[in-house]
Length: 131
Image (cartoon, rainbow, N blue to C red; front, side, top):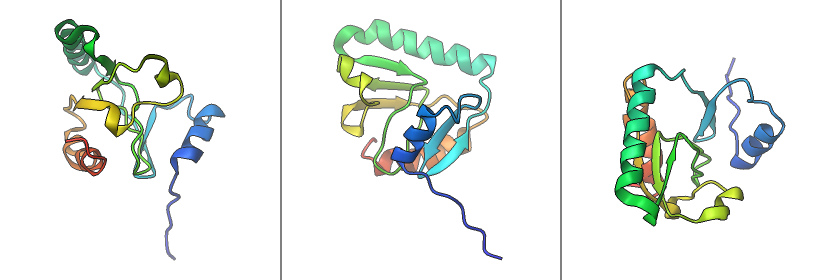
């Protein structure tokens, strides 16, 4: 028997979110695959907040610091990096998450997910032109 996995498109993924299908489980979309996000432990939450707050103080209004918010990439991926430094486009982000051209810098804080972050997610960011 051949096993076939279902690949999600960004459009179907967004429709499922709007329908509330993932309300009880944090997920991210990586290359069309739904990835369950592990619970955030105290050290991760602490360092994520500290880094984001430091960058807000350092960079001010020149950028927007988004912590643990999705970004939309062209390879059927919508990861939620720990910190994304993006263009301050204001209400544009009511219509869509930042696209690769809106992103200056991505930060992933890892311990439990280091292999995923340095492997698949790093490749996905690079494919989208985020280096």
